Length: 196
Image (cartoon, rainbow, N blue to C red; front, side, top):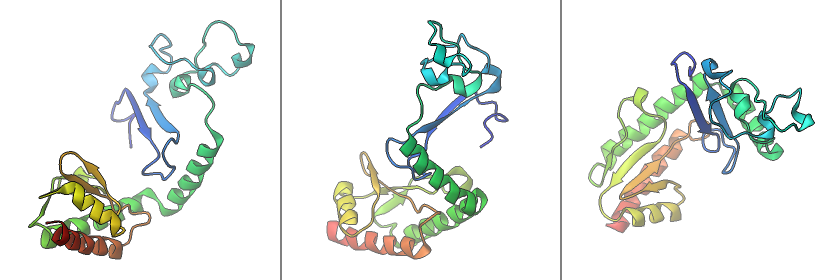
Protein backbone atom coordinates (compact mmCIF):
# COMPACT_ATOMS: atom_id res chain seq x y z
CA UNK A 1 0.00 0.00 0.00
CA UNK A 2 1.21 3.46 -0.84
CA UNK A 3 -1.48 5.48 0.88
CA UNK A 4 0.65 8.61 1.20
CA UNK A 5 1.73 8.57 -2.44
CA UNK A 6 -1.83 7.84 -3.57
CA UNK A 7 -2.87 11.01 -1.73
CA UNK A 8 -5.35 9.24 0.55
CA UNK A 9 -6.64 11.48 3.34
CA UNK A 10 -7.62 8.81 5.86
CA UNK A 11 -7.85 5.01 5.82
CA UNK A 12 -8.74 2.35 8.36
CA UNK A 13 -8.50 -1.43 8.17
CA UNK A 14 -8.87 -4.54 10.22
CA UNK A 15 -6.28 -7.22 10.81
CA UNK A 16 -8.49 -10.11 11.85
CA UNK A 17 -8.84 -11.85 8.50
CA UNK A 18 -5.74 -11.44 6.39
CA UNK A 19 -3.28 -11.03 9.23
CA UNK A 20 -4.80 -13.94 11.15
CA UNK A 21 -5.29 -12.07 14.41
CA UNK A 22 -8.92 -13.13 14.91
CA UNK A 23 -12.23 -11.36 15.53
CA UNK A 24 -12.06 -8.37 17.84
CA UNK A 25 -8.42 -7.71 17.09
CA UNK A 26 -6.96 -4.25 16.83
CA UNK A 27 -7.24 -2.25 13.64
CA UNK A 28 -4.96 0.10 11.79
CA UNK A 29 -5.38 3.71 10.73
CA UNK A 30 -3.65 6.04 8.31
CA UNK A 31 -3.77 9.82 8.48
CA UNK A 32 -2.06 11.72 5.67
CA UNK A 33 0.75 13.91 6.96
CA UNK A 34 -1.01 17.04 5.70
CA UNK A 35 -3.44 16.49 8.59
CA UNK A 36 -0.72 15.66 11.13
CA UNK A 37 -1.14 18.97 12.92
CA UNK A 38 -4.81 19.63 12.14
CA UNK A 39 -5.84 19.39 15.75
CA UNK A 40 -9.21 21.04 15.13
CA UNK A 41 -10.50 18.09 13.09
CA UNK A 42 -13.31 16.15 14.78
CA UNK A 43 -12.08 12.99 16.46
CA UNK A 44 -12.76 10.59 19.26
CA UNK A 45 -10.33 11.97 21.82
CA UNK A 46 -8.73 9.34 23.98
CA UNK A 47 -6.05 9.13 26.60
CA UNK A 48 -3.68 7.15 24.38
CA UNK A 49 -3.82 9.87 21.70
CA UNK A 50 -2.85 12.60 24.19
CA UNK A 51 0.59 14.20 24.08
CA UNK A 52 2.94 11.78 25.89
CA UNK A 53 4.76 14.51 27.77
CA UNK A 54 1.54 15.71 29.46
CA UNK A 55 -0.61 12.57 29.36
CA UNK A 56 -0.28 11.75 33.05
CA UNK A 57 -0.97 15.31 34.20
CA UNK A 58 -4.65 14.67 33.36
CA UNK A 59 -5.33 18.27 32.41
CA UNK A 60 -8.77 19.35 31.29
CA UNK A 61 -7.73 19.98 27.67
CA UNK A 62 -7.02 17.24 25.15
CA UNK A 63 -3.59 17.78 23.56
CA UNK A 64 -3.44 15.34 20.62
CA UNK A 65 -0.29 13.77 19.28
CA UNK A 66 0.48 14.64 15.68
CA UNK A 67 -0.47 12.17 12.95
CA UNK A 68 -2.50 8.98 13.30
CA UNK A 69 -1.33 8.57 16.91
CA UNK A 70 -3.56 11.48 17.91
CA UNK A 71 -6.65 9.46 16.96
CA UNK A 72 -5.93 6.59 19.37
CA UNK A 73 -8.49 6.08 22.10
CA UNK A 74 -6.88 3.80 24.62
CA UNK A 75 -3.91 1.54 25.13
CA UNK A 76 -3.99 -1.49 22.79
CA UNK A 77 -5.00 -4.87 24.26
CA UNK A 78 -1.80 -6.78 24.91
CA UNK A 79 -3.06 -10.26 23.94
CA UNK A 80 -4.30 -8.96 20.61
CA UNK A 81 -0.96 -7.26 20.03
CA UNK A 82 0.81 -10.54 20.77
CA UNK A 83 -1.31 -12.40 18.21
CA UNK A 84 -0.75 -9.69 15.63
CA UNK A 85 3.01 -9.60 16.28
CA UNK A 86 3.28 -13.38 15.85
CA UNK A 87 1.34 -13.16 12.60
CA UNK A 88 3.43 -10.26 11.28
CA UNK A 89 6.63 -12.22 11.96
CA UNK A 90 5.29 -15.01 9.74
CA UNK A 91 4.32 -12.52 7.03
CA UNK A 92 7.80 -10.97 7.21
CA UNK A 93 9.36 -14.40 6.65
CA UNK A 94 7.03 -15.28 3.79
CA UNK A 95 7.23 -11.77 2.22
CA UNK A 96 4.27 -9.98 0.72
CA UNK A 97 5.74 -10.27 -2.79
CA UNK A 98 5.86 -14.07 -2.57
CA UNK A 99 2.40 -14.22 -1.01
CA UNK A 100 0.93 -12.02 -3.73
CA UNK A 101 2.56 -14.17 -6.40
CA UNK A 102 1.08 -17.30 -4.86
CA UNK A 103 -2.27 -15.57 -4.36
CA UNK A 104 -2.53 -14.72 -8.06
CA UNK A 105 -1.52 -18.26 -8.98
CA UNK A 106 -3.68 -20.23 -6.54
CA UNK A 107 -6.73 -18.00 -7.04
CA UNK A 108 -6.23 -18.30 -10.79
CA UNK A 109 -6.18 -22.08 -10.35
CA UNK A 110 -9.47 -21.91 -8.43
CA UNK A 111 -10.94 -19.67 -11.15
CA UNK A 112 -9.82 -22.16 -13.82
CA UNK A 113 -11.24 -25.21 -12.03
CA UNK A 114 -14.55 -23.51 -11.29
CA UNK A 115 -14.87 -22.41 -14.92
CA UNK A 116 -13.97 -25.87 -16.26
CA UNK A 117 -15.88 -28.04 -13.82
CA UNK A 118 -18.65 -26.01 -12.19
CA UNK A 119 -19.98 -23.52 -14.75
CA UNK A 120 -23.26 -25.47 -15.05
CA UNK A 121 -24.29 -24.46 -11.54
CA UNK A 122 -22.16 -21.47 -10.57
CA UNK A 123 -20.74 -18.24 -11.94
CA UNK A 124 -17.73 -16.27 -10.70
CA UNK A 125 -18.74 -12.64 -10.22
CA UNK A 126 -15.37 -11.42 -8.90
CA UNK A 127 -13.29 -9.61 -11.54
CA UNK A 128 -11.35 -12.08 -13.67
CA UNK A 129 -8.22 -9.92 -13.93
CA UNK A 130 -5.78 -10.76 -11.09
CA UNK A 131 -4.86 -7.12 -10.55
CA UNK A 132 -8.53 -6.32 -9.88
CA UNK A 133 -9.07 -8.86 -7.10
CA UNK A 134 -7.53 -10.38 -4.03
CA UNK A 135 -7.58 -14.08 -3.20
CA UNK A 136 -11.34 -14.32 -2.58
CA UNK A 137 -13.74 -15.39 -5.31
CA UNK A 138 -17.45 -14.64 -5.07
CA UNK A 139 -19.41 -17.45 -6.64
CA UNK A 140 -23.08 -17.04 -7.59
CA UNK A 141 -24.74 -20.41 -7.08
CA UNK A 142 -27.81 -21.59 -8.98
CA UNK A 143 -30.43 -23.17 -6.77
CA UNK A 144 -30.45 -23.14 -2.98
CA UNK A 145 -27.19 -21.35 -2.15
CA UNK A 146 -27.69 -21.61 1.62
CA UNK A 147 -28.19 -25.37 1.38
CA UNK A 148 -25.02 -25.52 -0.74
CA UNK A 149 -23.09 -23.57 1.91
CA UNK A 150 -24.30 -25.93 4.62
CA UNK A 151 -23.34 -28.97 2.52
CA UNK A 152 -19.87 -27.49 1.94
CA UNK A 153 -19.41 -26.96 5.69
CA UNK A 154 -20.51 -30.53 6.49
CA UNK A 155 -17.85 -31.72 4.05
CA UNK A 156 -15.08 -29.60 5.57
CA UNK A 157 -15.06 -26.68 3.12
CA UNK A 158 -15.41 -23.42 5.04
CA UNK A 159 -16.73 -20.48 3.03
CA UNK A 160 -18.90 -17.51 3.82
CA UNK A 161 -22.14 -16.25 2.33
CA UNK A 162 -23.63 -13.03 1.00
CA UNK A 163 -27.29 -12.60 0.16
CA UNK A 164 -28.97 -13.62 -1.94
CA UNK A 165 -26.92 -16.42 -3.51
CA UNK A 166 -23.17 -15.75 -3.19
CA UNK A 167 -20.69 -18.19 -1.69
CA UNK A 168 -17.24 -16.71 -1.13
CA UNK A 169 -14.21 -18.99 -1.29
CA UNK A 170 -10.75 -17.80 -0.30
CA UNK A 171 -7.57 -19.79 -0.93
CA UNK A 172 -5.44 -17.75 1.48
CA UNK A 173 -1.90 -17.99 0.07
CA UNK A 174 -0.11 -18.24 3.40
CA UNK A 175 -1.53 -21.64 4.25
CA UNK A 176 -3.73 -22.90 1.39
CA UNK A 177 -2.31 -25.52 -0.95
CA UNK A 178 -3.19 -26.27 -4.55
CA UNK A 179 -4.49 -29.67 -3.47
CA UNK A 180 -6.84 -27.85 -1.07
CA UNK A 181 -8.24 -25.86 -4.00
CA UNK A 182 -8.61 -29.01 -6.10
CA UNK A 183 -10.38 -30.81 -3.25
CA UNK A 184 -12.66 -27.81 -2.66
CA UNK A 185 -13.86 -27.91 -6.26
CA UNK A 186 -14.48 -31.67 -6.01
CA UNK A 187 -16.50 -31.12 -2.80
CA UNK A 188 -18.41 -28.28 -4.48
CA UNK A 189 -19.33 -30.55 -7.40
CA UNK A 190 -20.41 -33.34 -5.06
CA UNK A 191 -22.49 -30.92 -3.00
CA UNK A 192 -24.12 -29.49 -6.14
CA UNK A 193 -25.27 -32.98 -7.09
CA UNK A 194 -26.68 -33.57 -3.61
CA UNK A 195 -28.38 -30.17 -3.29
CA UNK A 196 -29.95 -29.90 -6.75
